[in-house]
Length: 121
Image (cartoon, rainbow, N blue to C red):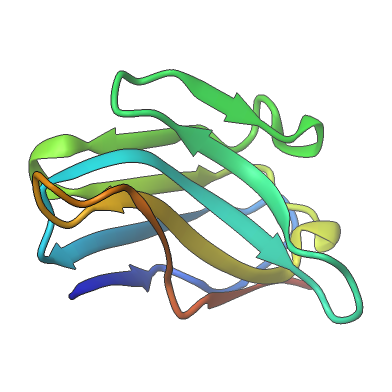
């Protein structure tokens, strides 16, 4: 069984920074894609940033240059450094990973439980 455990959310003032972490644990053979999504009430979940096992990254236009994503493959952990935060960044942030639990399984999509980020003065 695979689990994604997020940490690092909270309340921050506009212009401030937060760092989100997401650690994958359990039965893991290989991790392909890891990323962060966010969702606000009444809206669809949207991709914030993603990183492949090889280090290729993809960002939403709204966070480019502010939210670098990184990954520690040895720790099965992905990070999202959120800088220059704006009130419109307020959302629940979800970790996502595409993981093969063993050498004979296909890759499956897994989600974390979500962590609240609130940007407000």
